[in-house]
Length: 125
Image 1 (cartoon, rainbow, N blue to C red):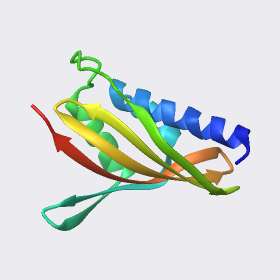
Image 2: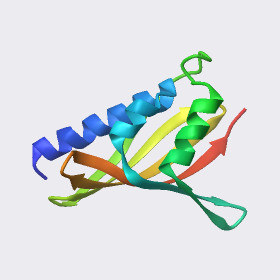
Image 3: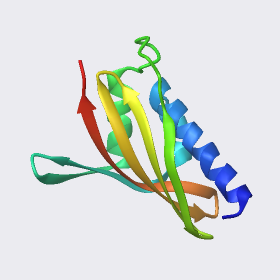
């Protein structure tokens, strides 16, 4: 893996973490390709949410930062399978929800972008 690619992917992940914590959809838009979708399981049914619908939810819920919630985001694993594809497993939180995300990256003309997010959340009181 070229270190320049890893550094670029890590920078996108930091933008993602900042955007998530701050509720900043402009930052999230820099991390997520316009075609990106989010997927999760709800009662045994796969849910599919386009990026723009997720951004509407982010804008409406208020930020973790503005609520003074604790921040803890980490890259758990990063794997680059070729010059244009990569996968990251990350942990982040919006208490009381604690997330594990699998983020699929493609290297585009604009640089590395997340094209897919599959996640699960634990609720902890």
